[in-house]
Image (tube, rainbow, N blue to C red):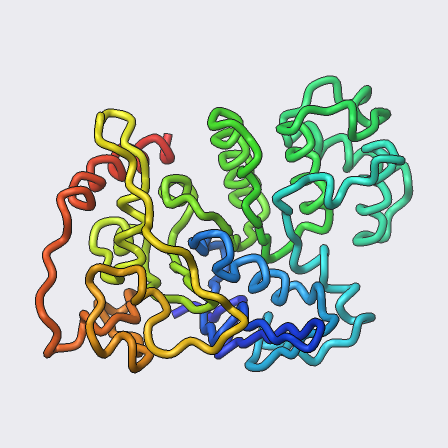
Length: 347
């Protein structure tokens, strides 16, 4: 079996502010392998962004980090800021949800690309300019010579996100973190951005951690899926495992909330609200929102049960003594939607 590019073991993050502790990441273990795409899926507030920003060494103030993160078998948690400067952007890069997070409104796009390229490569300014032009061309922007001279405010949202992708790829990273890169875009542009990221993955060969709240998007981008709730992974497996054989009630709820454009059925939503992450959670965090909750869900945190060699779910429903649960018709009907989405994603 291949050696993981990234190994995360029992990662916990505690943020303290105004003498109040918050626990957005509560013990995550996950491996990312070379050239694969792993989608981290969950509602807003589930801890996804804190999780990936911790991998990248961002926002360290007022944080306690426990566990281990190893990249190419080297611990990232022991690195100095100087060492991080050589890794961030060059080895591990990130596409942010809001492109303006990385774009300076006072500088031209060309200036920003050239400076970023020269930060990661020992080349002349002229060579960096040619590389910048090629990156924008590969990102399918037109009139590239003109675009190099323009400022961020002169671009549409989709164009800004393409530029953000170009900046993220300046260092030709081994791992690309995409934090909800399509959320603010319309459906047509979303599809183009996803296909663009996958095109670069095939060309450069990087791994991807793709953060999203939308399982519908996952079908066209991921090899494996990890479902995150209240700072923990509750289920992870191959894309087909999660779509066709889901095991955790939260995964079921996410699947049921995917709209079916061919149905007149009322769109289902997940009842209740996510838990307060400033409090320690006893048992299964999703239990108060789940119609399938057992008594033990309120008393003990479920361990991961193995479904198959690469599919695990943390739910007491998989215990040999648990009652059998029949999946709803809504989830069964989603299988045809997934087959359609898979077909579209492969075209």
